[in-house]
Image 1 (cartoon, rainbow, N blue to C red):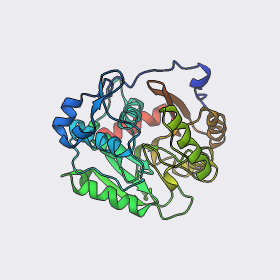
Image 2 (image 1 turned 180 degrees about the vertical axis):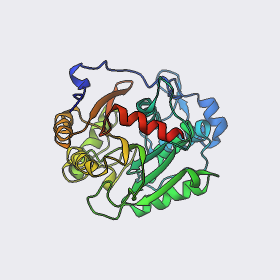
Image 3 (image 1 turned 90 degrees about the vertical axis):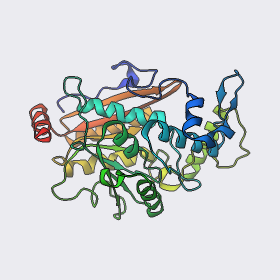
Image 4 (image 1 turned 120 degrees about the horizontal axis):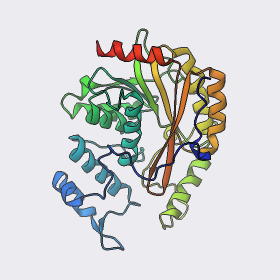
Length: 323
């Protein structure tokens, strides 16, 4: 491997404590502007213990309505909704992933924008949040893949409700059990980036335990009920072997599509997963890999990126894209 992956958890790269500089959600929520964009939010806003306007972040409906307002205000998305119990993602953190991905493609600090950039979202979900934000922020084209037909049907309803999105975002059903890229990437296709928010837990029991920890961190008691303010179910939250097994399969399969994608990436929830990821990358024979730290206040996260393209091929890829 030409460049050894950077392990941010061991201090080999500077950690961060704020959202990406280009992230429009860096400051406090301006609830007056959000309510102006989406009046339904008003009934959920009230002063918190510090006297600041806020919502009850333990209320799933309040979180969903806040997301709807953020999407409408910042990205001009209307009609956004998700079925009950499906994952309702925190938008600032999702936007952060996309802005750091954009840095991977930047040439001399200039991020490429427009439809020439094609991105594959593995597990796009009912919320289709990454394509919505990525297209809104950079004008990129997206393919969103998922194994859940109900999720894809809801995602399609969101696209249909917004003029032009069906031309920018395509949805595909992953019909091959256990596959990641197989059955989704079509012959002759090329993607500048892939991204993924993998199922983090190894079982439903582990997922529910994680839910309870988050409730305790929010200072709430949930009486053992598997309710989470950001929702999530089934394949959104867990798979056999957890994120370590899922990401290992992704890396192994990426070898088969080495010439189809410039940068493969995935979020990694647990720092303890990183050593196994690095071993899998070394075994796959990647040319370059990077670990990018992200943070939103006390919440720390990271994603791993890898490529099979050397520097000269990366330059040729960018040149071909510009033609």
